[in-house]
Image 1 (cartoon, rainbow, N blue to C red):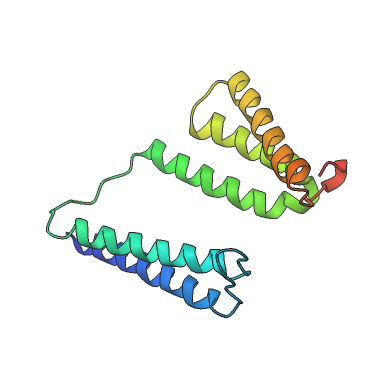
Image 2 (cartoon, rainbow, N blue to C red; image 1 turned 90 degrees about the vertical axis):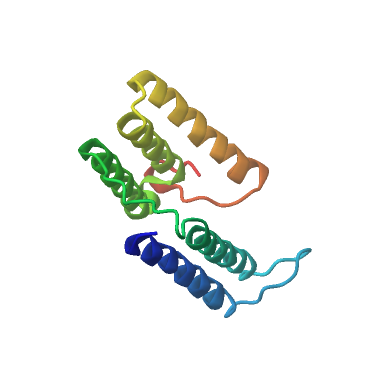
Length: 149
């Protein structure tokens, strides 16, 4: 294992442990009635466990660092930019429009689907998520300027 891989695995372990530790500041509840700290605690433990698995399985494997091509870097940048845009626009655009545009950008720019397919999948995703969370689960969603949520 190269030093960079060990550092990355250690970062995941520390991050997972930090998430789990912070989650303990909230009530955990139980399996039948989980509290607000239950899911973050479990996620932190899973992240730390996966970091440990990476550290253990790649140890001595001699795996090198993989170079990322320029198109790969562009896709990474577009993905990060799209997620940042979701954070910034969720309240003003509303949940449905934000998810639609997120999926449209990811499907078109990152996955390389045609515009028609990307629009079709983006509409299907936004509608499905709306039905599950708003209609079936009754969760309030940010409505934005169109009032859909």
